Image 1: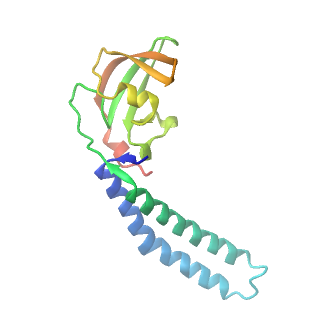
Image 2: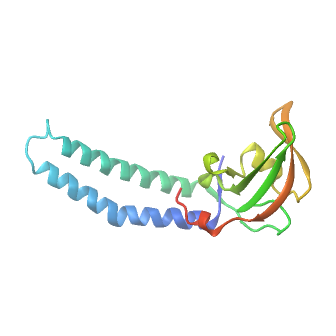
Image 3: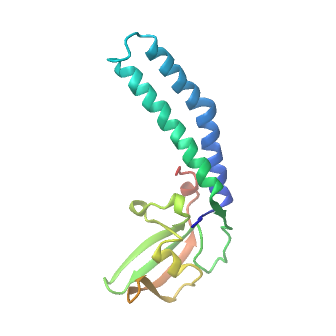
Amino acid sequence: MKHQVTASDIRKMEEEIEHRKLVVRKEALEAVKEARAQGDLSENFEYYAAKQYKNKNESRIRYLERYIRNAEVISDQSATDEVGLNKTVELYFEDEDETEEYTLVTTVLGNSLDNRISIESPLGRAIRGHACGDRVYVEIKPGAGYYVEIRSIRECDKEMELRKF
């Protein structure tokens, strides 16, 4: 299954790849070179730490490149009165008699601790495209779910767009 991302997400990932290739890679190679010059590698912690840092950077580059290759680019446009990408919604959960706010984002930006939910999550899939006042059934698995009511919809803060993955 391809992950759905916006053109903006792709651009941010490409910027990170470029930074890692041009800046971080050079720093990591220099750290390995300096640690190797200290002599005996069998007991050289700095050498192993530098190698680990270099390998993590290369791994992150490969991950981002693979993610971009396998991504499906989608539009982040939606009507102002409907739930869509980069919109913050206030939801009323009937079962708990509670109200919470969530921002709908692509999978790569999802973070439940920040109340950013993916459009591919059960809640995100259920409410996407609905309008204020709609009562929506969120199916978790066949035969199990809950109802939410969409209380308000607004554009999300631009600060969120600047966050890294």
